Image (cartoon, rainbow, N blue to C red; front, side, top):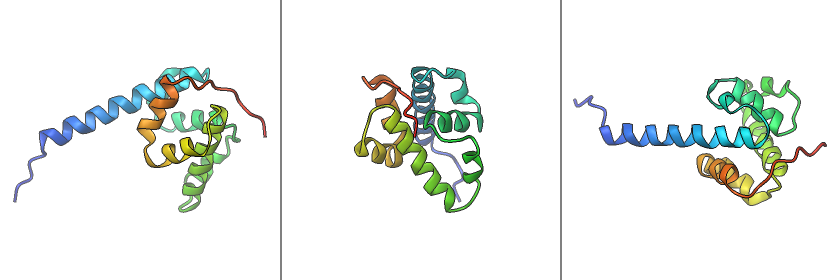
Amino acid sequence: MNTEYPPGLLIFQLILLVLSIVGLWKLFTKAGKPGWASIVPIYNTIVMIEMAGKPLWWILLLFIPLVNIVASILIMIGIAKNFGRGTGTVLGLIFLPIIFMLILAFGSAEYNLVEE
């Protein structure tokens, strides 16, 4: 039984990790939030909830099975809306989050909190 971890897979995972951090860091700073928040577990989720314009108690929804899926999608909808984007970006954030976070972070989208 071969238990060796393939080095190519490790490199790929490290690249995804770096891209995630860079994308979230830039996205947070674009929204006027501290960039370092992107690397702090749980706090980065709180910042994303704020960026989506949702109340902070939504963090509790993310701990409830099945409800967390709906809450996450609604948070992505809020983030896309506050960056002036539509359904295509929401679907991208759901299915290809790293790529679409980078697109929002380094693209021309500007953050503008929309009050509901």
